[in-house]
Length: 180
Image (cartoon, rainbow, N blue to C red):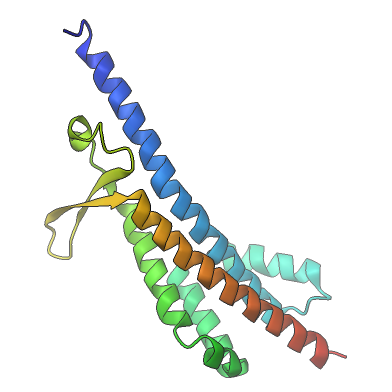
């Protein structure tokens, strides 16, 4: 019998929080890279590569401080690509649908709360966390999120990162060619 049940609960909660940071943190770092890449692409469109100081200011002053919602940034990128680089849409027809799916999932994942009441039942599940959130009707819901599921989502992010890096290269090349 334990001499200090509060200490055991504290250790259990610490382990649960570490698992949460490991599972959600991996995904959020991946999506953060996507967001930075999207902002970089937008900045290249408006500030040619030869104007790196202006480009950095544009990212800092406009894209990071005044346009912080990822949905707004995606709308800007979509408009730029549609109007100026439509050939990229042919290469990546599902790009914006996939990016919006990632943005929606990221918003959900970052807003959901770790269900610590579930901690005592989950000591043997080292790769699952249980999150609680409110649905559109205001009902409390619970969802288990596994490391395997997050790894699949990270793989989706990696595929999108590849596409975005390709688009960034195309935009840079086109701008460099047009400015010569």
